[in-house]
Structure formats: C-alpha cells, structure tokens
Amino acid sequence: MRHTTKQLPGFAAMLAALTLSACGAAGASTPSPSVNQVAAASRTAASSAPASTAASASAGASTAAASASAGPSTAAPIKVGVVESFTGPLANNSKDNQDGFNLYLASLNNTVAGRKIQAVFVDDQNQADVALTKVKQLVENDKVQAVLGVQGTPACYAVAQYMQQAKVPTIVSGNCGAQTLTTDPKFKSPYVVRLTQNTVGLFAPNGDWAYKQGYKKAILMTSDYGGGLEAGDAAGAAYVKLGGSIVAEIHPPLGTNDFGPYLAQLNQSADVILAFMPGIDSLRFAQQYATYAGQRKPLVLDMSGQITAGSNLAQAGTADVGDVGEYAYVSSLDTPENKAFVSAWNAKYPGRLISGDAAQGHVAAEVLVASLKKVNGKIEDTQAFLQALYNTNLATVKGPVKLDQDHDIVQNMYFWKVIKQGNGVGQQLIDTDTGVTKTWGWTDPAQLANFKLGSHKGQWVGMTKAKLAAEIAGKSSAAG
Image (cartoon, rainbow, N blue to C red; front, top):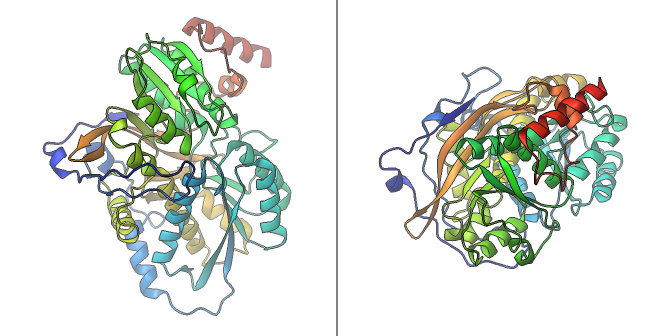
C-alpha cells in the first residue's frame, strides 16, 4: 500500500541547513562532514509504527532500561562477527553500517542480559571469495556465535551456502539484496535471516512510482554486477508491466570513475533515469551528471538512496536538488525511535549526515539485542535464539520491521525529494509504501521465480507490456 505524504506548512522553516563540504578523495571510507538536521515532515510515517508489544518496545525505552541495569559482568561475552566491505566502492556504506551498529550497542554499555557483546569486524574487500574466507575464520577460528553484515550480493550467496553446513545464526544486515537468498534451496537455510532488503522489495517500487508519476519513458542505469543487474530487472519489470517504455539501458562497471562515456549514451527523449550505482560510484555520477551538457536532464530516481542520502548527498549538495530518492530509511521519519536515533547520532557525530546504511546497522543491533533478551542472553541455545529472530516484530529507527515465512524482511519504503534549504539541501518525504515484501507487485510468486532476476541485461529497450507478460507466462508454463 502506498501513502502520499504532503509537505506540511512551514516545512522549509523546520529543516536545518546542511552545510556542503568539498568532495574528498574518491573511495574514502569516512563520510565528509555536513550539518545533519532534516526535520520531520511526514503524516504517513508517524502512523506507520505498530502498536507496542513486549517485542516492540521503542529503541529509546529499551536503551534507557538497559543502561540503568548494565553493570560489571563475569559471564562469558557473546561473540559476534560482522562482515563488511571496508575496501573498495562500498567502503562508505560499510563504515556507516558499522557506526550505526556500534552506536546502539554503546548505548547499552555493550551489555545485554548481563553479558558483554564483543563484535569482531572483518573486511571482505567486496570480493565473494574473500567474504567466504573471512566468515570461515570467524566461525572456525574466532568461534563467533553469530555472523552479521555482508554487503555485496555475490558475497551473500557465497556465505549463505557455507552457513548451511556451519549452522551458525547469520543476520544479513548489509546491503545484500540477493533475491533468492531465502527461497532457493541452494542458498536457503534456517540459520540465515535478513533485516535489510531484497531486490524486488527495494527496486520494484521505483518502477511503479515512476510510471504512476507520469514518467512514460525511462533510462535504466545500474552498475554492471550481480546486485546491479538484479536491481535493473526488478525496476524494469515493474515499470514495463504498467506500460512504461525503457529507451536506453546503461550498465557502468562497479567502481567507475569517469561516467562521461555513459552520460553520452543518455536518450534525450527520456523522462526519468532509474538509477542504481552503489557506494562512491553514486557520488561520482551525481557530480558528473550535474555538469552534463545534454539538451535536457531527465529526473534522477535514486533507487536505494545511494545518491541522495548520507555522505554522498553532503558532498554532492545542490547537484542533487530535484532528484528523488527511495529507501527503507529517511532521516526525516517522524517517529520516537528515529528521533532518538537522530539525536544520538548528532551527539556522537556532529555535522555528519545520516545514511540508510547507518540506520540499517542500528536496526541490526536493535534486533540482535531484542532477540538476545528473549532468550535471557543464552545465545548458545541456538534454536531458541533463531526462533526469537524469526519472531522479530519491532518498531525500529526505520519503522516497523518483521520477517516473512522465509525469514526475509517486511518493511516500509520511503520516497523523498531533495530540496534547497538555506545554504544546503534537505530531504522532503513525499511517499511511503508500507509492508513491502520480496514479492511486491507480483501477484504470482511462481512467475517471479521463473522470471530469473539478473538475466535480462540488454533486453529492456524495446520490451513492451505485452511482450513481458508473454515472456513471464511462457516461462511459467514451461516450468509447470
């Protein structure tokens, strides 16, 4: 269900200015500073949080209670491994995720149920084989009792297969959107849950939103790797199914420095660019698109909030004005949980803009702690701890979070517009899709399975609604 959010009177006055910082070296892992204050302006967001339950106490309340009771502990620490990509184009994403995770745990003195939580962070260098090696080391050498993180889709698939044998609880809390992670027997495991996003749930709402705004011609522009190709197919299918036309398909390699050759391929008839270039790539794209000398500039719809949030927004600044972003978190969300998070983040990192990755890291810690509380800190009781994870139903900093029957995320998706505000920019929340799942927009999950996301590179230009429907039906019939 989608709810449209209208701008409240006096919205501009409520937004604090975001100071623009000069662009640092490409690929730097620490976001550049900018004033972080985007005021709440959503009517829908405030109503999105579920009613309080024992399992969904607010982050602020649980923080206060735990801090009051936390004290010296002689119990063995709970040891968790966190896999991030601190090297390469996703370094900023990983640093933000790590800081969000640590921020919540620090608010509890890193203690739950009388036991310290010891987090061991490792760098997979955004390489699937390195990720697998690091996870094996965490499990077999460091003896961690749970694994979190994982950014890249290829790494996620590799790690999931190992976890089927290792039988260690794994919480995917990085950007891994691998669509079949929780459904394909090759990867599916009772030991793996996902708290962040899946490909269809994250990207399909973009194609739907763009068409319903009247943008009938689109350029599909996503990074040329597993996650980017899945993203393009999910958004493209949602857009074309409604009658939209994709007039150009562009796939820059992950880690592109010069977007000039790709900008030269932009079709001037397009109304919108369905864009996904993660990490530092999105900043480079935004900065170079701002100087693009084409006759007209289609609206950029930033799928997954890589261009229009966090340190990339801080550095791109007014270059992003007018663009629209979408993700499972927006800093202007008007809920008690998010207000407490924004306040704590600003106190810890003054002048640093909050990204969706920081929120995802925070939520991972929220769910980890809530699940540990349900088992009184006894993570050694693997089945009880897993069941506590499966039963997640929390009001978090990104809104209501729960898991489906496959232990995959169900959450809200938010759309915002980048607007000028004083000497900087802000995010104006404009739409919310509620209860988004991994089959969002697909009435027949079997057809989605047969569609095989990530396999349609180079096929979208000229794809019509009728042709797509026939292809999906044909694959479904053949499979059946």
